[in-house]
Length: 243
Image (tube, rainbow, N blue to C red; front, side, top):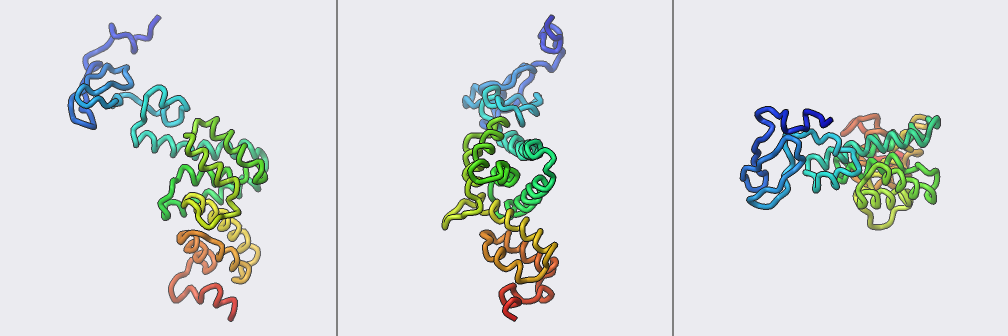
């Protein structure tokens, strides 16, 4: 038996409706169970505005089902991706809470840096969670690729993440902003651990000098000065070390 909700014999008024094409403004007629229709005015594919496409935010077959996703839906999909990557990271590490905690701290710093540096959050946060997923630079890229493929991530996003995690501790002279964000997040997570054990300025200087982004350096400055700024922050690290 066909579901009454999908059987047009049981449809009530409003099951067939019109919506304006977002591209040219011409009315497009929809049946309530249609995911999309072509606008007769401009030929663009228009998504049914009354359908719930929440599944498309995580379904690996969404583009095959719906065609090209709207910018808003694509953004939602990638926003959910980072959360699912975090789940896979925890599943892989199982009871290794030390590595889980470090990956979470790296992602926390990465999120703050990428917002200021205007990079791609989906790439940066995925790479931050997966930067040590294989335990070595040799194993991590292939495992990261496998995880992202299983989650239906875009091919270009997957490739960007794999390139970052494969050599994130060995930056070249020219790097993408996404690489720099993850690189600095890893260093800041390490700096945070150092400060807890040895808050002296000298122990932090080398890490600070290796940071690649302005946002990373500002975060490091806040960490090493206890969040103080201006006259209360004291001299720069190198001046303080040299006395």
